Image (cartoon, rainbow, N blue to C red; front, side, top):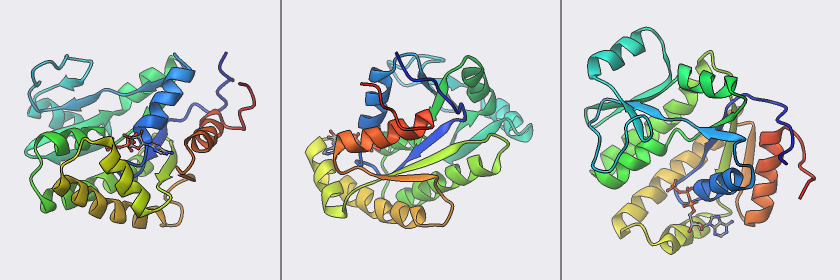
Length: 221
Ligand SMILES: Nc1ncnc2c1ncn2[C@@H]1O[C@H](COP(=O)(O)OP(=O)(O)OP(=O)(O)O)[C@@H](O)[C@H]1O
């Protein structure tokens, strides 16, 4: 049985590409099924083949998206390649009301964008800026969240993990590393995150994340 959640505020997990966020997420989801939830984003782009409505995204028109912005219904939103993406406050509130702790990875859609429409360094700078803005938007919203940053033990290790994953071409690796430098720089900003976990030993990093999300040290097996 999962320990009781003491704090149901959404947890924003950020960190550079390849640092191990996905690995840590899936460990949490697998160990504690039904305890955590990830959000479905809204987007104005068309569904891609194989994507499911209301599962991969909530697909809405630009007009509806902009109306939602004007009603301040997004906790964070960004525009990439002429399309808008965002996480609605309602999505978070509904999941939280159902007793789940929401895990927010605000980079998910930008990674999706990166892998499918990669357009070079300017896009990457824009995306890095948008990710940082995403964290700031959540901080400035009326949604109270907790922020954890996953850092690599070193840039060399990060590079080795990105290469080891075997999903990236050389130019994409170089660009992700350049973006990582910026994210690491931002993570040093006073008060930007509640906790920084260095993902060196995976089990140790996971224990720290468990402690953070459950609001205390987790002692059960
Ligand atoms: N502590 C660790 N020690 C060694 N390898 C690790 C560790 N954590 C994760 N990895 C490996 O590093 C690679 C990158 O991890 P992962 O895909 O989870 O990163 P990510 O932060 O989710 O990246 P992205 O943001 O690009 O999706 C994977 O091959 C994973 O198995």
